Image (tube, rainbow, N blue to C red; front, side):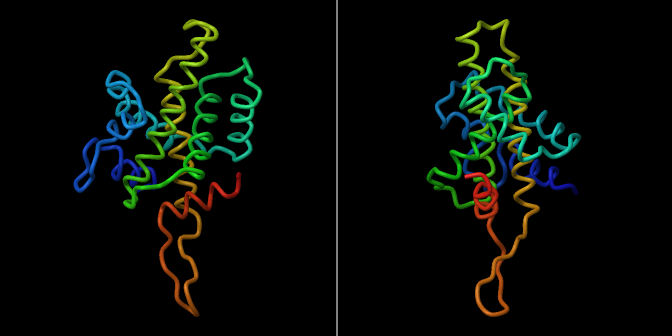
Length: 187
């Protein structure tokens, strides 16, 4: 089973056993409508397929996409760039924000939902500035954000999973710690 299959098993299924909320519920908690939340599960499943099929994103690509969209408000963009920028912004918010979830699956849902939320917010902003025809498809931007977020999760899970506790002893790092360690590279 690939790491992406493991991620899918753990958080893309709408109501996991033992999970306190669905993926769409996490998205709605970020202030989005039921209408937008209804497309989240489909977006996440498509993103999982893309994440399996595509190479990992280069760290510089993510930083540059974020800088282009969030700092320079660049008009020259495509859906993939907008999605990468959204995932990087989600990582930034995740790193600087309060993490109330203790469960690994819930943290993963929260992070990917945050990335999709950022993708939707970028789409809304660009749509209001340029009109609907000048902006990519809402679902595609959200999907690209989810794909980039899943790749960041996978990259963080591939990182060294142990931390030194005392002489010769180590313990498994949590997913939160791994994602936080990855974020520290950027912020």
